[in-house]
Length: 71
Image (cartoon, rainbow, N blue to C red; front, side, top):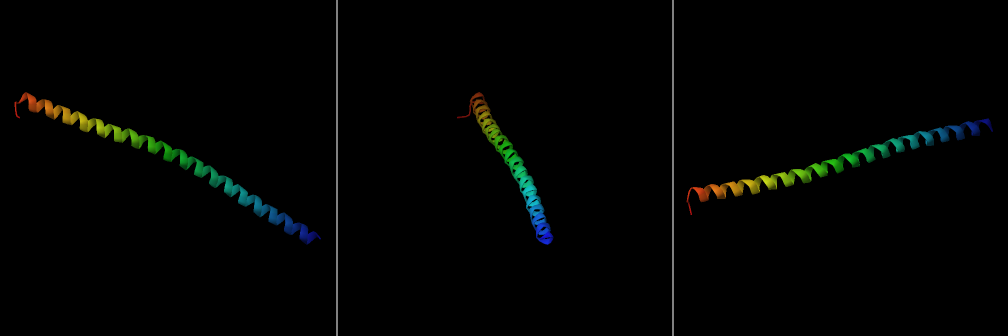
């Protein structure tokens, strides 16, 4: 009887340890998800920035061509 009780306590301890590990992994996944979300936001801003730079370059180039009277 005492041996069975000890085995049950050990099994419960292992289960508790596994649950703690699962909680830690869950927290890591949540933090990773937040980081990915922030990176996606930065990526969209950078894409917009490059598009703005290209548009500004094209506008300035066209104005320079008009000023130099090149058809």
